[in-house]
Image 1 (cartoon, rainbow, N blue to C red):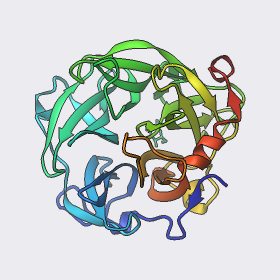
Image 2 (cartoon, helix red, strand yellow; image 1 turned 45 degrees about the vertical axis):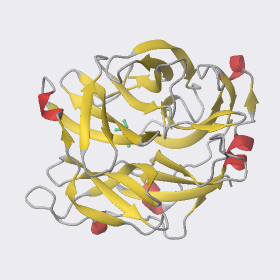
Image 3 (cartoon, rainbow, N blue to C red; image 1 turned 180 degrees about the vertical axis):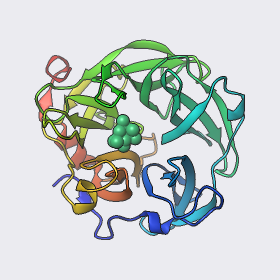
Length: 329
Ligand code: BMA
């Protein structure tokens, strides 16, 4: 077993979310968090959904990574009100630290589709919204923790596959670059889904982690061929350090799939959706060593939050199943 569930799972449920009247009262669900270490504490940015089906982001913090205190106010992105057009939902945050600043990349449901926006913070008290990208329908944007070739780099997933019910998904993760975190240039495709198997549709999970072997990256894969339901699982891929559009290795199987009751049953059944990954140790040059412990925070059935642990070495081994850029694409 590569990812081991915490015995405390689900570590956060709707009962843990304080009431913040008028909208956030007796909320429906808490799921798909971003995660980061800040001042020696584990921080999660929670996606909270109310009974009015409004979405709020709420910060939570913890000394041990398992028991969280939840803030009594939603996150506010200063300047998001200047975005042209209606923003219906801001969700699925991925948090990336670059130096002393943390960047939060979020999906934003707007007329015409989902777009990717970015906010920054130094203290997790105030957040400045930097802007929203022009791409008309894209989700699962994650920023790398350092610039490459002098530019910001992200993975994202254009929504080119229509689903039942009018939503859209996608089967290819692409690499994009930017100078200002608002306008993005697509570099090219990184990897695609594997039709008929566990990861037919795919999207990035938490931000990639730098190891001496490459960028280690968790992604979610969706099996769609079961007719009645889509099954969301977690996989792992290794990208070349100097050119992350090149896939070095990829897991054949998923490394986490819905099995526990809280993952199988909920608002959207059969979903494990990783958004936060905390690596407990890096070496002097910023690489995560194989022995480093890893915590993965994931949404379970769009209803609660699970924690699973592993090591960098176990994740590296898991993605050695399929090696070679051509076979992994
Ligand atoms: C995706 C996103 C995720 C969600 C998943 C399952 O398209 O909306 O936030 O967890 O669907 O509903």
